Amino acid sequence: MITGTCLCGAVKLRINGGLHQPRYCHCGNCRKFAGSSPAAWALANAAELQHESAEGGVIKYNSGRGLRCFCGNCGGPVWFESLDFPEIVAVPLGIIDAGDVPSPTMHLWTDSKPSWCILDDSLDKHPQGPP
Ligand SMILES: [Zn+2]
Ligand SMILES: [Zn+2]
Image (tube, rainbow, N blue to C red; front, side):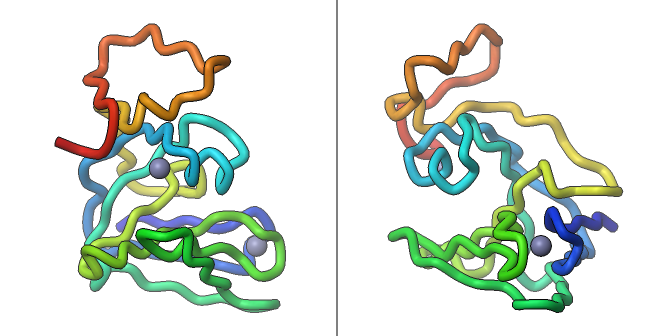
């Protein structure tokens, strides 16, 4: 089991399963949402995501291909709901507090990478989305 919380702790999430396909994303939407680049994410089965929230709940913003979900109290990112693949959610690795978190194995959307972000690792790099 994997657990995480937003910055203020009002949103608590639990994943009753594993995190898959961990990646660094350099796309412009992730950069703006995270306030940094890259953003580290992994995928989970939507049916395995449970959450509870207080103080403002979870707000969902449609960034185009999916819903960017964040805490209504502190604004911290909590998960992403894909419109193309509703059975999948993406979870930002930085909010995980306990459980097995896999290290990202690839960079996505490097075509959109800001110039100040230097990549000097040996991970697979994809100019756009996953192959
Ligand atoms: Zn919060
Ligand atoms: Zn992205």
